[in-house]
Amino acid sequence: MLKTNLFRMLAALSASTVVPSVGCAAQFVLFDVTFTYTKMDADNSTPSKSHYYVRENALNPDRPRDWTSPVDYRNGTVHIRAEVIEKPPGGEQTTWTLCYIPNRGQGNGYGCTGTGIYREKGVYEQDVSMKSFWQNEAIVWSEGIKRMDLVIKDGSGGGGHAHKRSDSEKFFPTKMRITMVQVSAGSAYDPSLVPH
Image 1 (cartoon, rainbow, N blue to C red):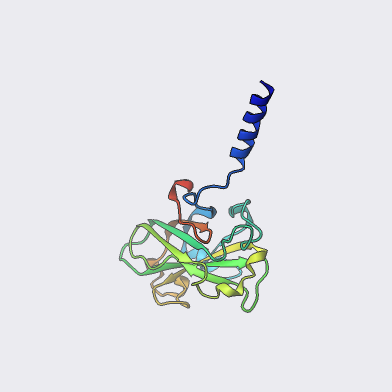
Image 2: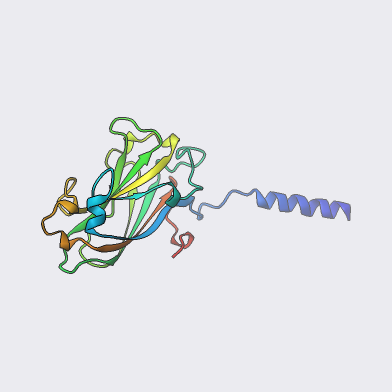
């Protein structure tokens, strides 16, 4: 009887320490925010205009400090889900630049990816390599991320901040839900792990 109970305890302990199978993605939601953004918001955002700031209280409190080890998120992908809930009519090309603001940077001190261009309401999703986006090497990934800056722009590229446009009514107001999911190197995004 004692041997049987000991065996059961050891089997239970062994089962609880098994590493998840390859089919289970090592991933975490960096943030999931829904917000309405107006021209007034864009004009008055500080320190930079056309920015929506995802600060500490809106970021996942359980995000890792070190994105390189023991789980390698730095060399993985980010799954970007942009849900355009409200947008002015007219089909104006719009995008959000998504900038990682690190606890410690180098060079220019931050790096940015984006939602891609959209024209209408809907859900837009993509997977982006963490090694492919603008200035990704300017972030010391072992020190973690303290904030995300989301910047609304037109379709012209880097400097096309929407608040500068004379036809700003084509961009504002808008309502967005933006979710960023960090997926470790060698894993695939698993949508079932993300709250909908």
